[in-house]
Amino acid sequence: MRFIIGKTKDETKMAELTREIAEHDDFILLDIEEGYSKLPYKTLAFFKAAYALYDSEFYVKADDDIYI
Image (cartoon, rainbow, N blue to C red; front, top):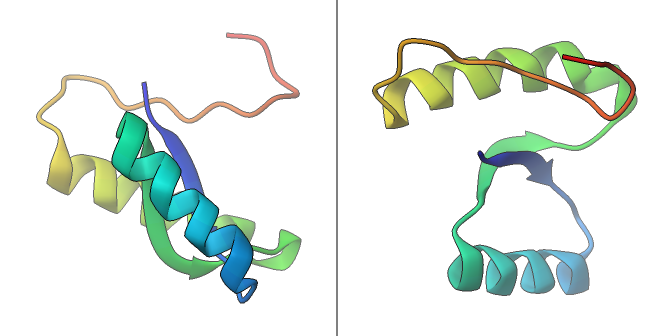
């Protein structure tokens, strides 16, 4: 399982995120700025990154407001 997150202009948050990624390796940091209006682009970037990084039969995107 990986968590998908976009970049932020907040340098403090980016530093914390970089440390988290280095420690746990459970995030995919996308080259897209976070924002509600950019969610479709973030979803597309996620599937492109997941396909390029991981050899899997299935790729699933879930959010905190859905049941699988």
